[in-house]
Length: 319
Ligand code: 13P
Ligand code: SF4
Image (cartoon, rainbow, N blue to C red; front, side, top):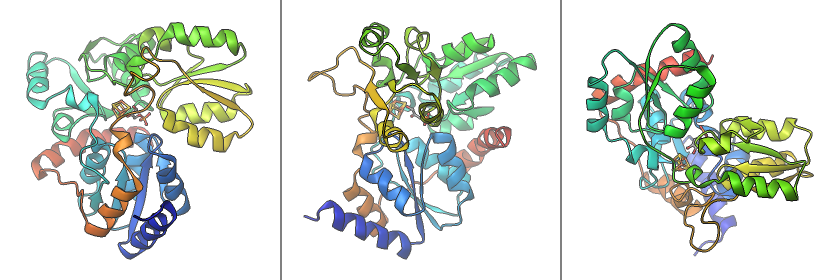
């Protein structure tokens, strides 16, 4: 069994040998984020991951995250080889929005513009007019609503409700949820505020409405990280996956970061403040993917072409 140092060295050599770059999400383990930093890769939110992978000149992208992130990279860069440490890393939002049921929902509401969250399968994206991530959802929906468009929103009901409240858009919501963010509890956060009265509350918008309502900042992982750097508070209560703490602490070593409480905090809770699918990514599986070209992402060409259009709309909108 190799120790972490040997594994890291092996991965570094393989990245060069295979002309590969590491694209990691903030929720992956610290050692993977560290490697991405040290090797010219990126640690990012899902929007930046998509953009970085599409613009990078490497022949191979190694995407450490969950499956929709690898699929998005492949849709945008079909000429590149896209590898993932594991193909088992899915997302409760993706699982909760099967393409056939979603298509039927769209067919039943033909007068509505279809906006889907990036946390979906390639086939669901191919049914959409727009793809958005949490970093850009508000701006895109505001733009569509200002043009008088009525919207179908899927799959995250909490993000959908938040966007609806902020923009006043006419939105028909799918009822999906993230099993990690859904667990954060407003009561627990208010209780924590009595211990840290000066703390700022940072919340990812996949959290329930009662939680976004008491937030000081609501935003994507990158937006929350930026807020933690820019705000003067010395303590932050953070309602998102604890993987983000690696970059938050690195950027602000003198600030205190506290995990927002969840319903089942403690021994009984499997997905509290850490995504079980993100946790499947490991240095060893990352090494295997590079060494064996395992975990390769393939997307059916017809589906890919269908999904490319709404993805490009997102990337062009945000330029
Ligand atoms: P971000 O786009 O904010 O990185 O979110 C992705 C995600 O899966 C959050 O749970
Ligand atoms: Fe999906 Fe939630 Fe995991 Fe993000 S944290 S990948 S939304 S299950």
